[in-house]
Amino acid sequence: MKRILFIIILFTSCQEEISLELNQARDKLVVEGSIEPGFPPYVILTKNQGYFSKIDTNTYSNLFVKDAIITVSYTENNVTEVIELTTEVTDLLGSDTIVIYTVKLDEYDFINGLDNYNFSKIGRTYNLNIYWRGDSITAQTTIPEPTPLDSIWVEKSEFGEFDFESEIRAWYSDPAGVQNNLLTKTKLVSYSENDSLECKSIDKEDFFLQLLDCGTDILIDGESFEFPIPKLDNGFPIGNYRATHYEECENGDSVLINKEIVLIKFCQIDEESMRFWRGVVRQAGFNSNPFTEPLNLPSNIDGGLGVWTGFSPTYYNVPIVQDTTIFYQYDPKFEDIL
Image (cartoon, rainbow, N blue to C red; front, side):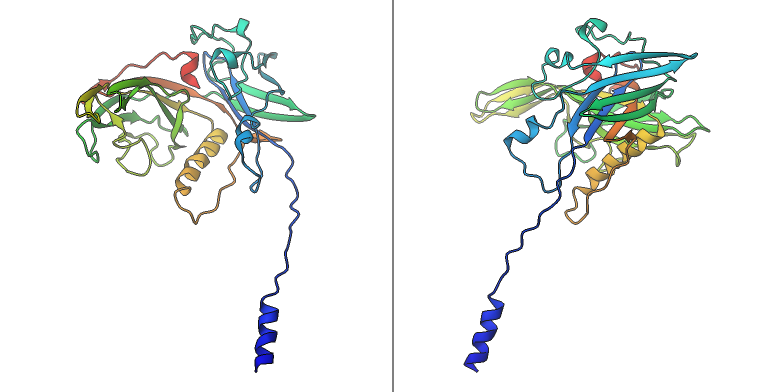
């Protein structure tokens, strides 16, 4: 019996070390390109990362591609116009790490950033061409007609713990008979944080727009309705916007926290772009579930990954003041469209 037990222990304690040699994925470009009426196009390029790739402090800085050759073109009345995008503007915008390709500094007034760039117009189809390390990456997108919101207003949050927590609501009339692909982005152009040790308010702002939602109007064609339907898990952030209020400091005093100001970008996009951005929204929702697998996002990039999008936006500057209604559109500058 002892001999049998010894043999069992001997075999069960033997472990063979297995080393898997995984093929290294070939570098592919990930494209985030954008063009909208009145502004020069811009492109951000990164390299894809393998699923099991090591991530360290150098990963982020080495992610962005700085040595690509990029052109954008359109053809109208049998005449083709081509522009080249460079990285000259990156330093001007104060971006330490993110590399942005757009037109040269002498081709557009980035300081004032007005929407007077005639290359980019509604109804045109734009071709993106990227040359990088012997590869050619192409994409095509169209800038559709815009569909503005009827109105926007701010109200006390239904789910907020405090009275100053607010929701942004909107009314939208969907044009009937055509497929409208809708995308919404926002960013906080002004907000404050409480330095409770110093008992003072620190003013801040976001640099990039954040994607909120994207989808098609198939189920709402031709209807007028209020949105978003209040939900805690998607749509506009519920209870995340703050009106002017006081916050307590560690020494027992109070400090005034100014109202937030929100920039809303409400867009029409073409169908291929919509499929990509809708996939991003769905992926963000799935990420809250640890048992779901990552999705392969649709792409309109031939030879790479990502998306080249023609946006047809309307912008709204919304101060978080409860019971305030906004009817007028906001005229953005270049830094607002990023």
